[in-house]
Length: 143
Figure 1 (cartoon, rainbow, N blue to C red):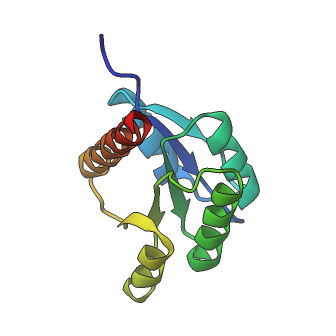
Figure 2: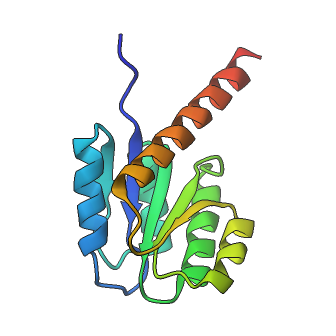
């Protein structure tokens, strides 16, 4: 019996309308066997969290090119927490200045991908993160 598909949500919070990278990543991840939900552009943090819950996402990837990453990521994490999804890892991709990356990691972001990141590296890290999360949850439920 094969393991269930790895469920990923790719979200575009805020007013950023540039979604080419998110669309390319969505397609590549689907081709790699992931089950991917793409939110579309100009989503609120609350709608991203709602869609994450509805799709049973095991990881949330946020694509942000607008420069509002610190505020938007914090709001998405708060919205996920409010829906009982505090254990769902969050990754961020886009134009993220080096000086802002520590703050995102401190918020709980597990990885940050900038321009030029290889899709194979992103897919590998997503797979590794989700599988580790599944193992952790399996241990908790056995107790």
